[in-house]
Structure formats: C-alpha cells, structure tokens
Image (cartoon, rainbow, N blue to C red; front, side):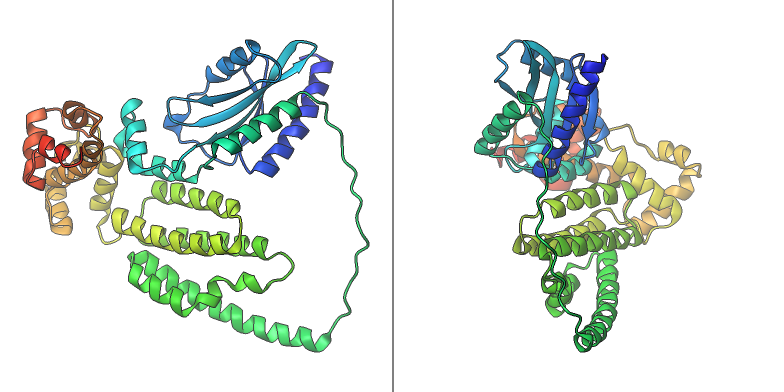
Length: 410
C-alpha cells in the first residue's frame, strides 16, 4: 500500500469510528482487494455463519459497476443484511465502508428454522442462532435509506477534524451534612442490593420464574436505583443492568447450564442493553432478561445430574443431528455402556434413545410447523437416517404422523 493510500485509509479509520459510535452498529473498512483493514465489531458472529471470504470482493465488484453516489444493500444467504458504499477518488475505487449485520424484521423461530434448512446448518446450533439474531439491530426501510445516504456523503468527502468549544465548569459548594446523609443512605441501599442479588441468583439457578416475579415486585426500587442518579440516568441504568446481566450469567452457571448457552444469551443482552433508547425500555428489558435466564435453566440445566449423565445430556444437545447411540456416548465419555444406561435412566427417568428421540422430535416440530421443508429432509436434518423410523417415533410421541402434524399448521 502506497503512502498516499495509507493516509487515505487513516482518514477513513476516523470516519468509521464515528459511524460505529453513532450507529452502535458494526463497521468495517475494506480495501480495493477485498481485505478488511479495520473492523469495529460488537457482534460475535457464530462460527457457522462466518463465510465472508469472497463476499468482500463481491461487494467491491458491485460498487465498481455503479456510480460513485450509489450504495449497496446486501443480504447474504444467512439473512444478514449490510449497507456498503464505495470509497472513490478521481474515478478510482479504493475500497468500501460496510455497516452491519442488521435485519429488517424481528426474527421468529420460523426465521431461524429457514436459515438452518436453507444453509444445511446443524440443528444443534438453533439456540445460539436464535440469541444471535435477536441481538441484531432491526432497521426499517427509512433507516436503511438514511444510512445509505449518510455513507455515500461520508465516503465522497474528506474528513475534517472538529474543534470542541466547552462552557466553563461550575462546581457546586460542598454540603457536608447532605454528604453524610447520602453516605448513610448508600450503605443501607448497598446492603439491601446485595441481599436482593442473592435472592435473584438463587431463583434463577432454580429456574423459578414465579419467585422472580415476587422478588421484582418487592424490590422494584432496587432494580431501578439508577433513576435517582441525576447526572446521566440512562448511562447509570445501563451500567446497573449490565451488572445484572453478569449476576444472571453466574446464576445460570450455578444452575447447571452449559457455558455455550450462557455465552450466547449473555452477549445478546449486553448488546440489547447498550442499544436501549430510554429508561422505560430498559426496565422492560430487565424483566425479559431475568425470565429468559430462568427459561435457559429450565431447558438446559444439568445441575441435578451426576458427572457422566451431565456430560451425556450436554453432548446430545450439542450433537443432535449426528448419529447417537448408547455405545457412541459411552465411548466418548470413557464409561461402561451398561453403567451409563442405568445412571441415565435413574436420573432422567428416560433411557438414552428415548431422550435423544424426544429432543429430535421437538426440533422436527419446528420445521413441520413451517411446512416449507419436506418431511424426508426434516428427518435427516434432526438426526434420523430412516424416514419410517422417524414417522413411528414421531407418532408414538405426539399421536400424529409427521404429515398429519404438518397439516395442522398449513
């Protein structure tokens, strides 16, 4: 890269940083060869969706074929949406600025099912993908047009450093009596908050949503303590809610949830908290967050299982689409098959094959409700390698054949 190009991209590094701060969205700077030279990333894109090697080149090629005042609304096969504008000088494309990913509608369970089936992704990735797509910014057509217009104007003009003009800082006089009172009140509030967090953690670790509702009702002022901080209430509230997210994360771990599920939901709420536009929205988000962590514990907790059964359940959840048998699990866990079978039945009240089939049928229902994937394909997607066996198992567990179940939703 020439010295001129280096200075040129240094200028755009500043512009990309400004875009990232203002939009709260991921911003990337791509050079003319399709290589990312700057990546300001908030979202951790799941590994199964990371297929951007040739897409940067495609974006640049598209920009070259259009006028300098054009922007590109790009949607990839995973439903991730981006807006790009070319960096032009003297008729030469030096690269592109890319904003995204975002989505243009709130993702449903069916949306994730379609992404999984269309791209032949492992069904065991469902939970992680649901959390990821939910964390994305939802952009309206008016928003996308404005972002495109902004990008074009930024990319076609040189950056000018701004100069801050600040007013004089006025320091209020110190009131010693008020300070003493505030310290006493703070001590009481902090002690109450620690007790409140302990009760919350215990309830989340059990997946007890009814107890959560009672705690929230009794301790409403503690959840929203930041309302009383006058300097920057929304920032203070976000900080407190981020702390609450960490408390929930630790509680779910104590409740026996695998780290992979905790990570995806924790990351989702960290992004949603930062994006919250006002205090009422943040208050609602806090309640949603507490309940979702409870749901996570109810669905994925292995707290009451012995070590071998816990590892077996986690392995099943994470490899549902793969061949799974008692002997496969036993070999993976380095344990005697008969011993594992006895322990699994005693602790889950189901034998291993029935447990695997139950989880596969639960996953198959989501695709059958959509009605846009063949029953044969669904059977293979969720881990059955025999259509007749899938049909027998499905009817045994639901009292419907797969086709009968599908017709109920189409």
